[in-house]
Image (tube, rainbow, N blue to C red; front, side, top):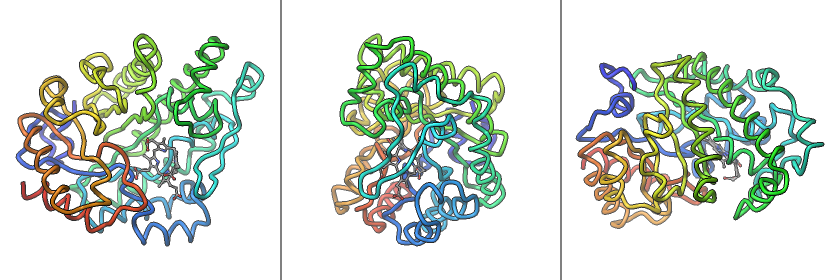
Length: 347
Ligand code: CP3
């Protein structure tokens, strides 16, 4: 739990406080829907160069704070930097997304570097965190992040994003020892990566398990919940005061009990569950974050205002951080972001 005496609204929500006006930030708040982001990315050359340039990564992290005054800034980086730090090849194809060298068996797994080697690649990211810790307005909370092991593994195994995570499910069945070893390597690397972000000044950390919903039944418990629980337990032992947000996207009824089972201070929910359902089944266990559909940032209008108010009202009885259900998309209109913020703050 966070320090309840903090005057930062996000830390108060994470400490369990219900607030009349929930704090607000937005997944992918630094991104291509902002002309100033596109300009800085062009200056950097490409996306990865931007991630590894502490001055420019600091600049794009601050852009949405200057424009909108969000209550939190999220470090600008990517979940796929950890595979790269472990020795995977990584590049981004414009208009298509990430590409990585694949892992199809023991031979490729054996090529990966050890956990102790990751800081060599990731040290510019820690510099960005240090920059932000001193550059942010005093009321703004700095959030660090990493991908959860299952989600990161799906990209490492397939070598790209996949609609159904088929290659990862297949490796889990055909090469269970390799698959388990990969999850374990990622779990340990994620602990060290997040711990270093906290040492550098991150006040909160978030674990993105974007593909958790494709794990069913015991697989969900073993590969989404259990690695998350281990990461949180290790971070809590080293940094007891740092709150942790878990995002097991599309977990459905597995959101129920996820705070207790994982040790997370906050569970972020996607927009496939209603805020009323979340208030009844998830929020009694602790802070929740979410969950406006990101399509409203494209379409705007009365529907945006109505949905935003509904979510604020449904979750007002307990600790809540307002956010989207997933990242904002490049075709979003910044004016709709402002309308969402004004609606939340006047609700
Ligand atoms: O939220 C933020 O503003 C912080 C930065 C951040 C990025 N990616 C920057 C980014 C965060 C937290 C992420 C997380 C991330 N990255 C996830 C988990 C969250 C989710 O969206 O489910 C995943 C799965 C990735 C992997 C990834 N990175 C993909 C699949 C893509 C391509 C899709 C796309 O939107 O282009 C990226 C690229 C990426 N990461 C961009 C940004 C701003 C766009 C790159 C560009 O500028 O062209």
